[in-house]
Image (cartoon, rainbow over all chains, first blue to last red; front, side, top):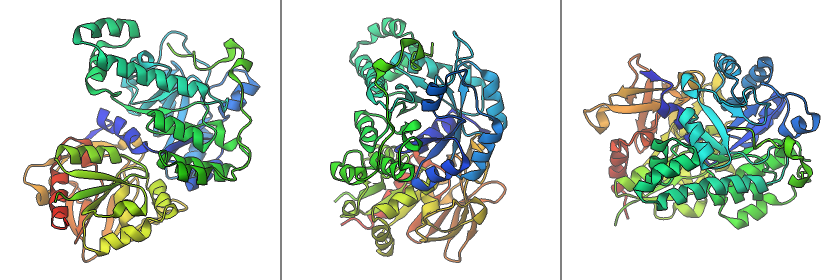
Length: 293
Length: 199
């Protein structure tokens, strides 16, 4: 019997496909998410919209809060650590968290290096803006990738850009002759073996979700139609007028993402979505997506 | 005519099942709505989150068609979350606050029976029903079968005796994921069962 193999790490992400992972800050929100059909919850102290508004250093949440959320639900519980903060990751592994997000939403602890995720039994998900970044994270041991988007904005534009960049990168590699793949790896800043694998298979070797800016069922279906295999929703649910109804509708939209009649039906009467931010309104220094090396 | 195998595509690793079916030359179909059941010879309920899949079965009116499918004698196979959804009962300690079950398989399951994700594992498993060579079995936050009814036959056990695969006439449940290993013998066996019901 072998525990925590690569197959079991990637496998849990495969079980989450076609599903919605929701940010929650209390056990009550976690239960609302579970009842609405979330496949997992991300336990944290503040959703990205509040981190953005309040400023300061954003760190791993108090393990006490994460454990209370874990006790409140039966679905997998994820939690975030700062980029490069392997001790926060050791702590989350010790309390039996199911998946760790090494996340740009928190303030990075290391401005040059990410965590060596192969050293952990618990699987990691990491954000990426393009194929090179995705393959660097997988090279370090990430068993799941999410396109970054711009968290806490309720604005889907960056999520669409990052998802398209990752998928365009894959399609480009597929079109290249073999002798060009080494130079492509150099230009992407990605491990050659992974570049070759992606060129052959036409897909990432791990599951690809979309994150950062999903606020409506239509947003979720948009990124699914573009090629995401599932969706993270951060501030979009519990910063809206009617979280229960919106959570259910986004879950249903991810299942029926190619069925406009059902999308129309689930989108009706959900109340106000989160307010949202224009990207131009965010000073360059306060953008989260560029964090990651 | 080649039998068509439906794979419930509400949430989870339905694509992995469809890929396994395609490798065998079988015809698979994504099933999301009641009209998708037309002409199916077998149905697979994939791995995923049982709370999510159970809720979506109710929401989109799939309970009736699945129950009718089971009554017709055509085979249904649930892997992991799929087995939970088919079950009669979930052990109260591991049941979600709202846990929709189809109640077709006369078993009590214990969800997430091995602990958090770091306890997920792979092992070799003897499954005499599908052949003498053991299969590689992948258990991910997996359930186990805690109790079985009189009509239920255990198909596989862990070394400590825990039941992890069952059959009750045309209904099959596995706590593990043959769709993740590239070993398609379980799918081939299921296709043969479904083939007996091809139109």
